[in-house]
Image (spheres, rainbow, N blue to C red):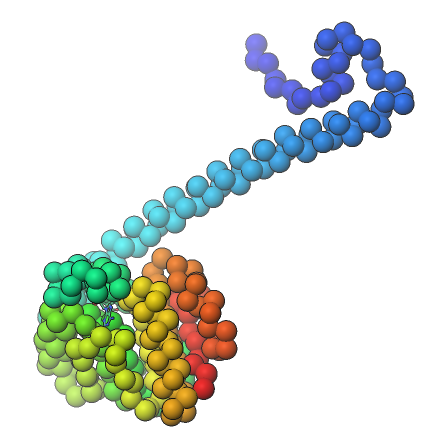
Length: 273
Ligand SMILES: C[S@@+](CC[C@H](N)C(=O)[O-])C[C@H]1O[C@@H](n2cnc3c(N)ncnc32)[C@H](O)[C@@H]1O
């Protein structure tokens, strides 16, 4: 026969141990004690439920993320097969001609942005794309630059500090141009983003989680100085495939930058003068 678990009760405990029932005058004190104990047990139960729910949520997110990763890897390969480019394979930066310290500043590796997230962020920009120059800060093998060609930007610039990735980007652009001749003007530039001087045109500055916080902060600051020097519309589009929360220390400090759109995976800011 199964025994039903009973909730702890002071009254029941007193009865079981042959203690006299509570007198009326003790009643209010007892019920206070009982309520306190019941609150404590309830709060332990709630805490256990909340931490279990948190663990399950984190696990589920990681399962979904890995599933998306595999799916997007296949899409990246399909893109390369279609255009004859080489953008899909990940590359550690220390094998792409970057020294170990600089590689750390650059988050360690090249990987291409997912097409779906790139297009979602571009579609969320409240602009007429043809008035703007697109700059990919940390352009790697040029995948985001090639996809930006769908948006009739005036020009498409890529700033990359890894010489081997820059060479691959140059080749990718040439191959892509054969399929889509005259689609737009590409400018892949081999340069550290910290020392890059932005052009004096309206800009869409794209960042697919390319730098550590200190570098990101400095590059945003440089953009601000550039807008101060020469006023025009400059947008920051920041994409992070896990969550933009990873860089919240940087974005929390952008007090007077105007947050235009946001989502779990992208943020769009307008740089103030
Ligand atoms: C995550 S990959 C993004 C590649 C590309 N934007 C895309 O979406 O396909 C980040 C790139 O930033 C580059 N990078 C990191 N730090 C840099 C810096 N200080 N200056 C220029 N490029 C940098 C890395 O070499 C890497 O290619």
